[in-house]
Structure formats: structure tokens, C-alpha cells
Length: 388
Image (cartoon, rainbow, N blue to C red):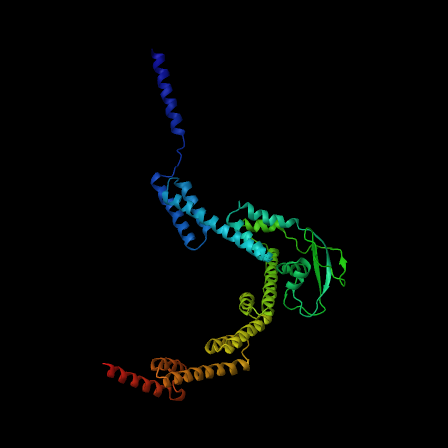
């Protein structure tokens, strides 16, 4: 019996010794969990308000790791996931549009943005990687003739003027609009897209380098958010220069076809990146000046005057602009003054007053227009009194 008691006491002492040596595990108190998730939610809301959707989504997901049943975080994650994928789709569609227009560097940027937003976007990844397989078989040399542009060369050799970007990129042109007569350009022959017209005065030559290839590993790394290196920044700058050349050349094409509004849109794209671009400035002056002349011929005098004012922004020493602006204003006042007199003589007093008011708005002192308005208004008042 004594032996049993001793054994029992020893067992109790051993248990006390074991539990006394145990190290307590520190846990986050349950009441602290909501505070931590709230911090992530607030950070996510801040990022979302700033337009940084990816960072916002990360913060809301962190909130869910702390508090998995937080309904606000769940709703935010669902909302942002949908919005991010929709945004990626918009960039993907924009890339397809640029690609159809032959604007490959812009298309590439849109596809990369789509991938950065949604790394599993297989269609965007597939289009980027597919261009890696482009093989250039050779090229022909074309000597520029008067009146030729890159768009005309693309139509001649590829049967599609929109493929002028291929020629621009292959020749590393920094100013596609500034082609000179006698200048030699290489027209690449691409596998699967044979040249339509190989002219008699051109020579086939072997290609030593592929100037249209891309560093796909670098591009995909950028899309996944790893950031450009110093060399990649230079490559992006080169892409921008090439795109400006494309805008210039397309603007010249529109200008030559007398599509001045469309031309001005392209040249303004150039100025948005390079405000001192002399080619864009000169063509924009011509675009607005010629639009103003057309409006002047149609007797749209004030609209013409405003166009001449815009053309002055791009060529501030344009004496013709000042001359035509004065002619527009004088012609406008003369036209409406004369029409007012015709209405007055035909006893159409309200219409006469309306015409003279237009003149008065531009020049209150023009040919006693105030006196005529008052005189017509007095007659109208007397007529109204007689009717009563």
C-alpha cells in the first residue's frame, strides 16, 4: 500500500515538473484580428481610389488571410477581380486594333499591359510570343521617287498601305515623314507574306540581321511587373520614336488626300510627345490654314477666322493669317449688315434686328448699327400699339 502511495506521489511530481517547463505559445488575441484586417482594408480602399487596382487587390487578399470571413474584403476581391480582368480585356482589344492598323509597337504595349493586369491572359501572351516566329527572308532596295511615302511603298510591295510600319521599323526611321528623293530604303520580305511587286530597278540582298525581332523574355518579365532595366528603357524610348514617325507619316498621307482634320489628329499626337517637332508644327499650320480657306469660300466667316487663329499657334509669323482674319471679320459684318437692310426694306423688322444684332456683337460702332436697331425697334413698338 505504501509503495502504491509513493508511486502516485512520484507520478504527480513528474507531471508538475513537465508542465512547469513548457513554453507558452503566443497567439494573436481574437480581439486584435479585426483591427489588423481593417488596416489592410483601409490600405486597399486607398489604393483603389488612387487607381492602383493590383495593389488594392493584394491588400484585400491580405485582409482575408487574417480574417477569412470578412464580407467587405470578400466583396472587394470579387469586384476588383472582375474590374481588373475587364481592364485587361480593354487593353487586349486596343492592342488588336493597333495591330490591324500596323502600329505594332503600340499593339505590343497594350498586350503587355493586359498581361501585367492579368498574367494568365493566354490570348495576349500568345500574340506576343507568336511574333517571335517572324522570319525575314531578305530585302529589296527601293530608291525614293517624288511624291512617294511609306504608305505608298507598303501598298506597292505588300498590297496594304497599313503595313508601312514594317518598313519604318526595319529601316529604323526616326522621322518617317522626312523622306528625300533618291533615299534608299530596305523593303523586307517576310516569310508568309511575299512581296507583291519586285521592281526592275531593285536588287535582292541577303539579310544579315533581323531588325524586327523582340526580346520576348524581357517583355514578358516587364508584363509580370519585374520592371525595365536601363537597356529596356532605351528600347522603350526607341519604340516611342518609331511610333512618332508612324504618326507623322500617317498625317502626311491624310494631308495629301486633303483629309485635314484626320491629319491634324495624327500631328497633334506627335506634338503631345515632342512639342518642338518642326514637321508636325508646319503641317498643322497648313491643315488649319487650308480648312480656314475652305470655310471662307463657304462664307462661314467666323468659323474661318477661328481656324486662322489656330493656324497662328503653329506659325506665329504668318502674315496671311492676320490678313485673312481681318477679311473674315469685315466680310461677316458686311454680309449681315446688308441682309439686315434687305429685311428692313421688306418690312421684316424682327429679322432685320436679328441681323444687325450679329453685327453689333462683333463691332458696336459699325455703320450706325445701333441707330438702325433702335429705329426698327421703335417702329415695331408703334405697330404693336396700333394693333392693340
